[in-house]
Amino acid sequence: MNRTENDSLKNGIELPLMESFLSIQGEGFFAGKSSYFLRIGGCDVGCHWCDVKESWDPYLHPFTKVDNIIEEIKKYSVQIVVITGGEPLMWNLDYLCECLKNMNISVHLETSGAYKLSGEYDWICLSPKKTLTPLREIQEIANELKVIISNKNDFKWAINQKKEVDSGCRLYLQPEWSKKKEIVPKIIDFVAENSEWTISLQTHKYMNIP
Image (cartoon, rainbow, N blue to C red; front, side, top):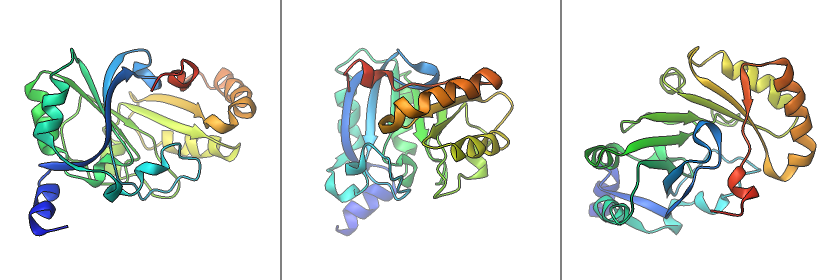
């Protein structure tokens, strides 16, 4: 990578774009809503059950000018753009968010919360991971807490994470996809006894859509 590319990434003028597409949000509070997804490459959180491990290495994905990303989005009737990854906050998202805001688009972020916040958002989904502790600054402003449940110990993790977010933050438990048959009944029992939590399912996978 040359100095110009370095500067472009540092300033958020370019981002390692893994993929971008119009689809349906399948998870959490906005499940079922038409959304345009920007999947940014790069992640060092290292979840063993991650279903997009190909996103981990940012240098496998083209460094794409944000202006070109915006021009592609303009081809569609878009009200929500979801910035996801990978871990998108590894990069400077200020310019991307500024461009989206200028289009009157609602900007959503999906993050582990392990990196300093950049950009301005209408909705932040915090999905914390045990390998990298989420930052307090993101816990305090998260609109949605989504905890992935892979085993029974993850329920304790979820309870502890609930203590760190604002009282108005929406609380979701989502089964790890490969263990859904085993985990979903356990989540049902937990939510039945802990009504502040809601079950999140990856409905896009059930519907066979991206």
